[in-house]
Image (cartoon, rainbow, N blue to C red):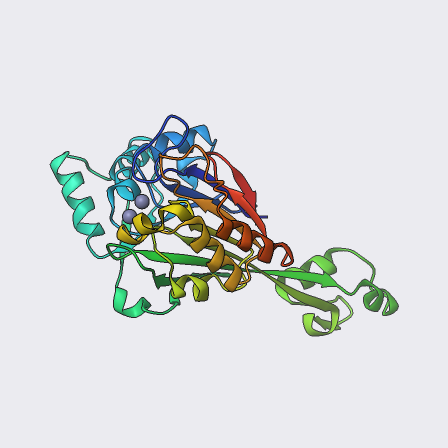
Length: 315
Ligand SMILES: [Zn+2]
Ligand SMILES: [Zn+2]
C-alpha cells in the first residue's frame, strides 16, 4: 500500500510545530518515494521521517513561491554529498531551471549525478492532462488558481492482481509448483508433456486503481475538481478559515470551505487539509458554512483530516 507522509504543513513561514510545505509519497515494495514541493528544511524532515534520500526518484514542484522551493538546492546538494549516483527527475513551472541553476552556480555547488528538469508549460495544462507516465503509474497535472502559476498533480497507480485459477489447473492434472509461478510471471508456460498454458485461460486479472491528488497553493479552482475526481486521497490547501475569505481571495488561497467544496464536488474518499496559516494553531474553524459543508459531507462517507507534520496517511 502506498502512503503519504506530511513533511511540512505550514503556509509561508515555518512555526515551532510546522515546517514549510513538502509531502512525500512512498511506494510499498520498493520504498522509493516522490516529493511534492520542497520548502526550506525539507531534507531534515526527510531524515526525521526515516525516509532515505537514496530512495527519492522524482520531485514535483507546484509553484515557485519560496516556501515551496527554498529547500530544493540544499536537498540536491546533500544527495550528491552522500554519494548517491541515481538520477532524479524534477518537474515544475518554467523558471525552476533558472532558479536552480543560479542557486547552484552562485554557491559553487556541483551535482555529481544526472538530474533532469521537466518544465511544465501552462498552455498544456489549462485543463487536466497527462504529465508523465512510468510503468503502471500516470501523473496528471492541471493549472490551478494562484497568484503565480501553480499546478496540481494527480498520481494514478494501476495495481494488477493475478490470481491463478487453481481448480481449473488441478482438474487438468497440473498441481501447484514451478509451472504456476512461470505462468503468473511470464503469462504462459510450456509443460514437459508439450502442453502450453496461457494466462488468458488460467489467470484472472483484476485491476485496482489508486488515485492520490495534491492541490498546493490555489484559490477555489474548477480544475482542482476535475483533477481530483474520485480520488482516494485529496490533499488540498486550506490556508484560512471561512471568516478570512476576503484575505484568501486577495492572496489566491483557499479557505477550509473552498477545500471542502472541491472535495465534495470531486467525490473524493478522503480529504486532508494542509498549508495552514501560522495564525492558527488548528484550522478547525467552526463557521456556520463549515458546519453546513460538514453536514453535507457526512452522508458521503468522506473522511476529513487536518494535516500535521509527520502525519502518515495510507492510500
Ligand atoms: Zn505556499
Ligand atoms: Zn504560493
